[in-house]
Image (tube, rainbow, N blue to C red; front, top):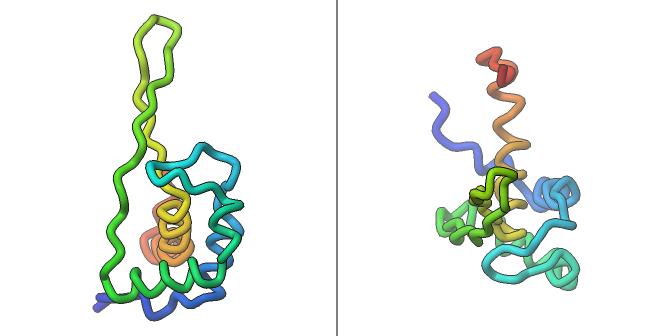
Length: 108
């Protein structure tokens, strides 16, 4: 039975997740830009990892932004914080090979 995989994630894993995370997007609700996060990268990633492993990590609310459409309506866009993007990427890196291999699911 597969119950927990967080023990597979370590500091190097988080660094790779950060490296693969897009850093030029708009900031989330916390206003944190990649350059700010990088100023204390190891400590920030270590803290994020500790919160994920302990179950204390709670994704913050997304920042709502509306993009105008050609027909005059607006499309809502949710912008997560940089840290939440890193957490999502770390979990994606962990789960993607499992589901692609075990289930044969390829998102079609």
